[in-house]
Length: 376
Image (cartoon, rainbow, N blue to C red):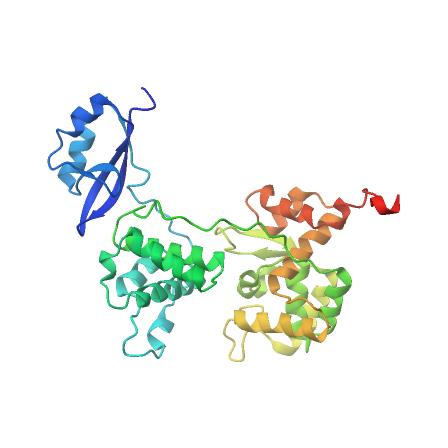
């Protein structure tokens, strides 16, 4: 079959009515068949033919073009991206907030769909926050009637407000989730431009700085938290989800469950950290999670962030230190000590070594063999 003889189906909203867009290369045979579709029209805005979005018309498209052209539906039918997460969905915080009477809350069907799709609670908070900012920007408009130009105007507003590329991308994701998943129009906003990802190198601390941060923690619990983040290369969420049973002292490994991408993995357990953990356990007696709050609930992400930043400030570190910087430092120090990048990839839980290769740009060992021309 000629590769040019294919039709891509798109979701369109024209005059507030759902339509099926038909995108194809100029072809007389296809054009003749297109004209036979009932109610077919041309859209100048989207530069494609379209028909009302009905089951009958969808069936007619497949029937008319069978054996003539390939129907590409990757933009039309929604993919199942449900995640097999063990955590309990919790959106109770949404209803507990105090907001002005004119404030527009996240629609109920938005929350229900997030729950149905088994989105992680952290992702839910991000989506709800971003989407509420979006709908309150259009406080006098019916959000179901907004088009691509309206969304571009909002994104331009975010740029003017100097919001980060990451926040803008998260906003786009939250907006697309409503129109494409909640309203059932996958890839409707397929032409919305995203900001280019900036390729920034990770911030890495020296080993002496790491030890200094650990030494400036306030107590044994804080010391264990900072030490584990670095020595095991953990993400903050992974540390918080650790349970007592995940510490394997016989094999000197830590089991990381339901990490990014819903994957389990093993990472390293330090001998010195194990000694501190035993002291910590006797003093704090956690019940389920390795680190728990005052009432034995799961420890909070904010608390971990404050512990790391406070210890770094007390240690006199000039850069702002986060849990993720400790993870970056772990990977870089392993690379500098000669550990194979494939092993580092497994310890970090990266899908590909391409993600891990960024540490070659900051590892000192990558430049040790190069003589500075000023010293020649």
